[in-house]
Image (cartoon, rainbow, N blue to C red):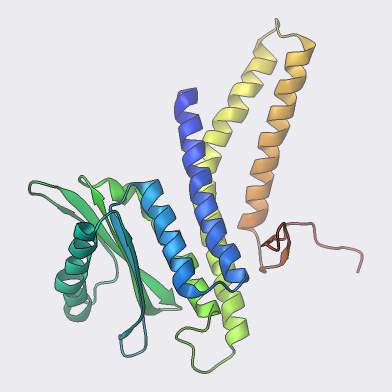
Length: 263
């Protein structure tokens, strides 16, 4: 893998992380659900080069209680609405459709997807979108599913669709689950280029005798920093609770500090 490909893959993974992080932070700050959905859709549209995306959240009678979209123009808004009304809704009702990636031909080929928003095993909504071209969205399935999971948790945290039961415990359980799904996405996208970075640095350090001390020192710092990123990913992947701590400007972030062993 060339260094340019490693850099591009790393940059894309970090962009995905920022989107998922923003969803989690917005939920922790109790941002209004429609505003959170609009922001997440806009970011996903720009990153994946979609022409339109929509998020629908419905009640127990499958009546929409939140319907938010983002598109590059009215034509794409209309096309996505037609797909939902004429295809996806019918397949959900008659064929129990859960998720799908579909490619369409014609003068303007495009790929569309629909993914479920879930509360436990119950489908409480759908995330859908359109991308020009044929089939490339399938490669984004892990990221898109993580976005859908994170948004599901956000809406549950906002109280949408809740009736009875221990809401706080359910929210905590779903948040941890979403964090672990986000961690799996990041591990998948970051660890491969990170391994390449560490491996190339180690080759330089161990096989090149002509490196001066200053350059060796800088390479060691880079290797240590890359190792720290790997360690952080392992911490996130092994979280058992959703502790948060203050960050900046009133924001919160996941607390990855070591457990207090003094007790």
